[in-house]
Amino acid sequence: MRIDILTLFPEMFLGPFSASIVKRAIERKKAEIIIHNIRDYSTFKHKSVDDAPYGGGAGMVMRIEPIAILIEKLKRERSYDEVIFLCPDGELLEQKTVNDLSLNQNIILLCGHYKGVDERVREHLITKEISIGSYVLSGGELAAAVLSDAIVRLLPGVLNDETSALNDSFQDGLLSPPVYTRPAEFNGWKVPDVLLSGDEKKIENWKEEKALERTKNRRPDLLK
Image (cartoon, rainbow, N blue to C red):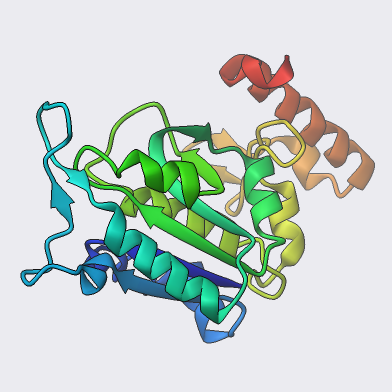
């Protein structure tokens, strides 16, 4: 899978993509993540990419030209399944969306900044808009990193145990049950006996009960 990220601040991705699962996916050639600096496509001498909003108001707006030039260039080189804009007012990101996106071959992620992008970008160049939460970040870079991580970990051959992702929270509409590991007792705190019993059916039933219980207590909205 290839992910092209369009940003004004490429350096923000050095940390998230240089460690852990995403790094492993890139090294194994299961994922290709290409970072593009939108400023490189500015038609202005000083590589300006923003301007004051028509109608007045505080803040600056990302101009349409460099974004359009870059997206059109990429589309001439290959076809894209989605062109996604990371923004506060987009569709709230959920696991089902991540699952669907992980089946794609090529996607573009556009990171907004300042007061946002010229609305014509959203109207004519974007196919999907995604928000990672009901709050505002300084830009879409962190959101793009979050979305990329969530997608990449689902790609075949990325996780050492591919069944692990199937047991994550939200995959079946529930939160994951509690998990424990050695030692079986610490400071008098014991692992539930059922997990030490070796009885697979009882363990599976316990996990289902605890997943439902945790979801009812912490995210009852998932059960509606």
